[in-house]
Amino acid sequence: MSNFNTLPAAALVDGDDAAPQGARLADAWWTLRHNFTSMIGLVLLTIILLAALLAPLIAPYDPYELDLARATLPPNSSHWFGTDQFGHDIFSRVLYGARLDLLIALASVAVSAVIGSVIGGVSGYVGRFVDEATMRLMDMLQAFPRFIFAMGIAFALGPGLLTVIVATAALNIPGYARLMRNLILSLKQTQYAMSAVAIGNSGPRVLFRHLFPNALAPILVTSTLQSGWAILEAAGLSFIGLGVAVPTAEWGVMIAMGLQEFLQGHWWVYTFPGLAIGVTVLAFNLIGDGLQDLLDPRRTP
Amino acid sequence: MRFLGYAIRRLLWVIPVLLGVTLITFLLTRVLPGNPIDRVAGPFASAEQKAEMMREARLDLPVIQQFSLYVRDLVVHGDLGVSYSTARPVAQDLWERLPISLELTTLGMLLAIVLALPLGIASAVAKDTWVDQLGRVVSVIGVSMPIFWLGLILLQVFFVKLGVAPAPLGRLATSLIEPERITGWLLIDSALVGDWAVFRSAAAHLALPVVIVAFTALAPLARMTRSSMIDALESDYIRTARALGLPTRVIIFQHALKNALIPILTMIAGVFGYALGGEVLVELVFAWPGLGTYSYNAILASDFPAIQGFILLITLFYVLIYLVVDLLIAAIDPRVEYA
Image (tube, rainbow over all chains, first blue to last red; front, top):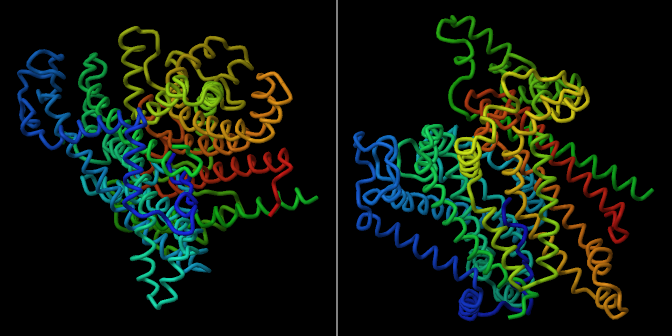
């Protein structure tokens, strides 16, 4: 499932004008600090980010160093997570995998958020038949089974890092378009938007300079949740051989490599990369959840 | 009468959606790399043979003409074309595989509903206590784990280590013969003919994939149950009911749950459709010969008719299940306007 339909657009425009940006950030920080589970998410994400940034310093081995003499060793004191069938150190590969998977998540979400927001923003601002046509097209794109859609795109583009980013981004464009369109529809009725039009600002200027910044908060919350989804979907694509190629240090690929070791009972080959995915996605979801509560107009701080 | 009109309008809207989805699939499949005919024909086919096959598959025509012929065949003959890779009518392939996937998804959904409703209700009643937090953590963990990995972990424990689960090689032990198809659901068919060996084997093969489908569906259902129960519990009529001194049990299950049920129903429809369309990874891990595996093979073979047929079937399923739920809601909820 995607998370687009759960955000109340009304949260932004409960008053005549939206609150100043600074107050909103302080609000977000307040919520995160006072929400235990969000705090856990934040701590987890910080650790993962540090692991990704410092991977070359922390990793005890080169993630691509081949050594068949130490193939499929169970976890021990020199290889904390054991080694895979090529003798790669799995702990080092999990660390390097964090770089790749976070990169995929952020790039994919950024691409879909920008493209989707522009489509949805213009659609909502222009209105009438442009809006109607765009939204019906988005309906149809959303009617596709998500993962099948991603598989088709990934197969069409051929394996690779860029493929994974494009395929996972394409899935989310309709969701962002719909969200931004609904936000713009309500923001367009605010006092300041009408004033901006009345004093002679051009349409694009009103949309991009005045309305977009005020629609940012829900887009960011959604993006937190979508980052988790992007990691899951990217790993899924790599797992079935349509994403990043073997033996890249990417979590989905590492699980796929573990598949060959599965019958021998070499559980460590796929267990640790899977845990890494789970913990990362969990971190994004916990933070996103807390922020979502913040946007709920019925919340009682 | 107004209800009937509403139902008919909703039903008619299905047609343009299906047409649009088919057209988009058509255009998208045409950008898949490689000429599917090269693959089917093999390396020894002559140029004329290939040209002949292209003509037969109508791939020599402009895309828009291919599309109109496809729609005509579909509407007039119910024909979805012939799969390039299985060389059988796509409609027949899908018809055989649909119950295989439906059995897995439906059982998974039922398990998820049975677990999610109590979990969601308990979280709502005990809002902001540790019960609520626990429910939240369980739900979030459920959506955070990669399902294919979860499949491997369960198999590691129950098949490799404990040896209680059967090998992940399909829906039945290889020594057993599938009963003749009545519904296509192995559990039902074997029970109908009284073949209990098949029934036991089918149930054993279903257990792990069903648990995984349920686990992923659990989170959205539990959360929707929680939030709509909270809305209901905070409403005026519940305060009135409390003031009247009705027992808590009656308030929760008869008054609040009844009103909270509508968004939950809609959510069930959405999750069901999503699960059926997104089952590829579960099916691949367990070598389940359902629609997911079929669509995976179809994409890898650039099998245009098979991909189109699959997408059309899933979309139809999605649209129909939403339709049923909307009609159900309109029928039970007097507040729905038939606009």
